[in-house]
Image (cartoon, rainbow, N blue to C red; front, side, top):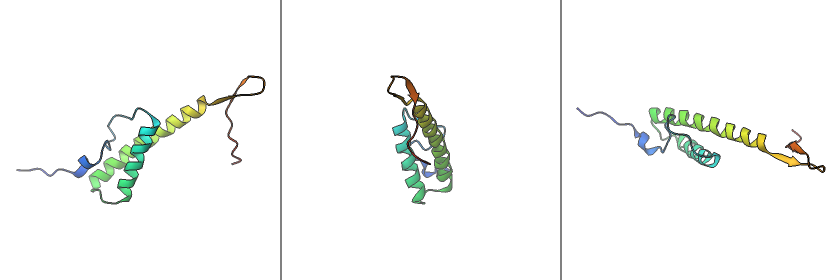
Length: 91
């Protein structure tokens, strides 16, 4: 008796239990790849669910990485005092 295999092997690291990338750039690149695959709408249901879960994990990793980076960004003012970075964006 043979068992059916899903096409998830076409999805590199889309398993939400896969190791997190080493850095933001790797996570972002993988997330973009997952989005492109899902937008193509050519994935079977189980692969779509796995891709969604992996994408959600990668999104959380990226958000945490950006938050950590934002907290580390500091500037020197005229008196050489460290100040937290403040965006010039008026929004």
